[in-house]
Length: 433
Ligand code: LLP
Image (cartoon, rainbow, N blue to C red; front, side):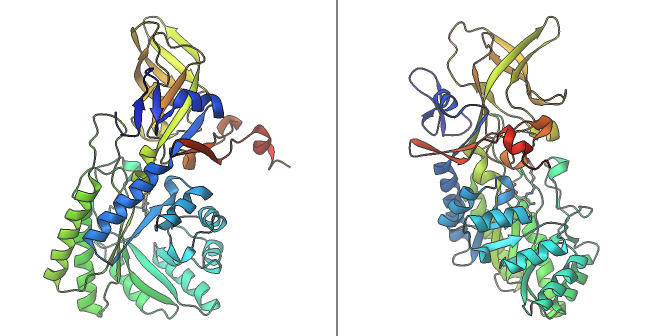
């Protein structure tokens, strides 16, 4: 199985976090997001443990909450000693409602409005990750009007191609994010930040992409960022206090993808950074990472009930489920691969069929996965499980076709509880005047 929290019980039924998935589907209804809380905590501890040995006493692990944002997840992150990356007023507000200490929050986004900046400052967000010069001055103005000095990092683009989907690459020079080192804009914005009296420049941030498997991506990014830090030290006498290397490692959605050993990878990055820093003769900055996907992705599973099974002789088969692109837009957006299987053992016969698993939206592109091999006995009422749906599913869900979003059910130590309740048609019309 692609993750150790997935298995089969003695009847051959699919289990997740040790619990029978078909029973969970009956208890909570479908479509249904499941999240394995124990796995989430374990992943936080893996990152924190690895960072603590690579950068003793001088590191931070921030959960990139865009991967999955709701109150309970911020409570869990707080309990695990994680910081957070937030990108909107909505994420900040959710963290506040969860009682998350915002001095441990890093506020991203390539386009923070003046109102966003004011909201974040009024609520004590610890760090702003500044995308560009225009934003730098907007932050200076808001900080000046409050007579405070705002801690910031500058988001720089190191010019690295991480070989992931184009839509989730961010570190190239022509990215919409950050200020490029190659064009000289990174140097200019550093000088500008150092000249502002309500800004405290704490260091630099970069993020090259998401679902990255190339293990040397962080090393290449750190190499460029540390060279730049050394240059700024030489030219301006500015010493980087924090270097944030951005998001975490890729995860396995299908058997053919690799499993990444996070601890071993971070150890390698650590070795590289220590030797680079001593070669450059600069002090070791605090190193941060911002994993999102690898904290929650394989802690998630979505359960659906099968509806129409359509066979078009000589062409193809469709298995329709009661969710779709409204709860999982990742195939439609990126062609992302998934593993989909029946929750209960279907023992009528062993014959298989290949089918596109599709949703119920009025849209041909509403596909969860093409060419899925399923038992040919699959029929209306059976439960299907889509694996590895903990990251960028609930957080990217929509109400297209006025379809309510599924609930988020947490699984922990053999029991389950509702973290986000199921949306209703009443909720959907609640904003209509
Ligand atoms: N830090 C920054 C600044 C980011 O932009 C991101 C992701 C992360 C951290 C977290 O990266 P991760 O550890 O999750 O790879 N919706 C897409 C992913 C977009 C990621 C955007 N930024 C998807 O469904 O694959």
